[in-house]
Image 1 (tube, rainbow, N blue to C red):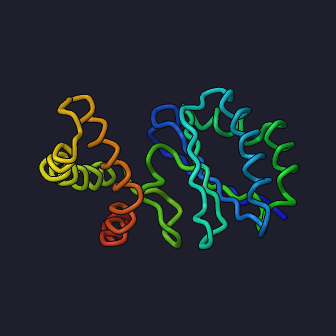
Image 2 (cartoon, rainbow, N blue to C red):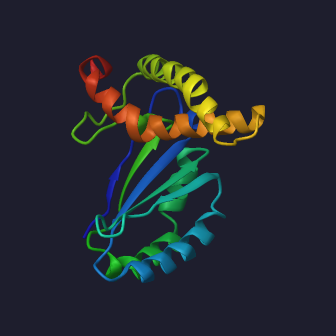
Image 3 (tube, helix red, strand yellow):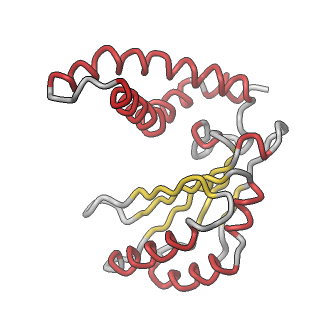
Length: 197
């Protein structure tokens, strides 16, 4: 079996935008407990990797899926590729292979490119000015709508009036909606314009 690696770069420079790797592991039936233990081990080690900014895990839904998605963000693509090609990670991947229904698969994106990429979409990320316009046009109504509708509802339910707590709730809801709801549909809607040369 071979590891799938798609590398995305951009002319603006890899150190300016950072890099994200999205890893997917589909687990064999009955192996979730063993995989969770392995995940704790690799998380503890990878969190000491040079340049690591963030580590997130999306676990499968019991009875519906068997796929884990692990998202790691690094300061630069050099740091990301250093961790992904490290001997420590290679050893840990060999340990987990018997638990996987498919091989270790991952996709590397620079900056926020992963928000704009879809299965079957062109492998080249859209130009930055289009990413900027698309993101801005999505964030503005979201931030306005959450501030005007969701925050008052949360306050009615007992959330204290605090600007830091408000900002935390608004930003969390906005990022979640952008990543999981808005951008996958929005990029599909404007796909032709987004990837036009």
